[in-house]
Image (cartoon, rainbow, N blue to C red; front, side, top):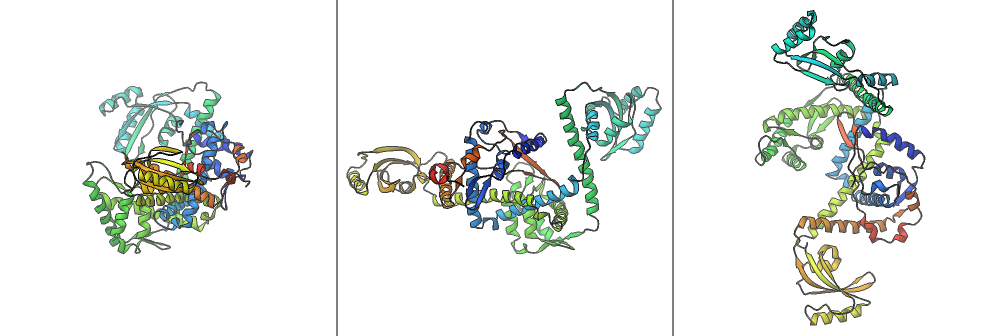
Length: 579
């Protein structure tokens, strides 16, 4: 498989190319029908072009990888429809996961409306900072904890006839000799850049102290590199980088302004008694972890740990933990929110401080969500589309888990490797006659059309495998009606697989594919091969990561699991019927 391309900044240029290619083909063209659901070209491209798929680089010359991917999308849709029919999206663990995804998309919609959309860059602004980015600067710097001392050193250098020599002497006295740095615009704090690219004009000039966090910096310009001639491609790359950095800075400033204005007059409180009960329950879970892992490793709550916390506080789940003028949030709700985020501490004693921080972050988000809903952002078409995409993916995964759990229970104690000989006969009467012969001659596998199967997992052999898992070696099994003929088996040997879990996964995959094949026949799946072949794609393996506003990140397209073997189990004449 080709190397993965992680698409963050680099792939921001791809949507334009993709849109141009897609504008020349009808995105509403149906490629497959699954019951009442249509998988159109737009949905196929959204998932295919933002995924890693074997053979994808050959998509321009071969339909095979596109066909396999469409089969996997159909399997996902079939499992999702079955999961919805069973109500999996209304139960744990899927319901809180989907609700959290909806909240993340809502926050992102509000961020784009309030922060991203108002930020507009002119070509002149981008060109200006791009030229700065082509001029690296070298400077010396001193770090001082006291503003008066910083001003004093700055004034000494300013009054000196040899500012460079005086600086070096002072740096030696401060124990900071040799502190030099060469950097480009965009790699420094903005306060530094204002000095080095605007205020300071010549080598040796020194800027007034700048405070960053709790320290004061004094900087002296030492060199300004003259930009060399660059190729048009290099210039465009530099412009792209400069524009991205400038946009991020403008967005950050806009975000801070918005949050300051948004937070005015809003207040909420956390019920202390319930807060300390929650903190104590979390501490109990982490204390169990602390005994089993090396010291110094951060303590982190996993999904199972949060379920333990939920069980401990089961009597208080409906009580309000957070109360504001316009909303209340129960402990049950808060636990779901916390479980979807990272909760880590260095020591059990730090839990109350970390919990209080997480709760105040959550309260801020709740106010933002309230604002987003008041604006009706949850009803936007693109948000509903994104949510449906994730709902389908999670329902399919949920159904896979349900099937795997039921198979694990059904196959308990029966996951054997069995070796069988098999006779294939035209009628039940012939099979019955051969069965009597085999029963009279132990160990015999004689007769016409007899073959020997090498060791196979019993669950993959249907009814014959089920009986072979519990029968004694030498037993005759059958006859069974299979594929419009009759088969008789004899169990030759049985043994445990070397890796039971790997064996289970292999057998479960076959069983899931067989289940998908039955669903495909039930829902009457059809595929338009001509439309699929005419679909033009970007044949590049990549994972596109979408950064969401207000500090969240989410994959733009969920992983598509390669469930394609079901295709070999169904009647192709119905599969390729006209849509």
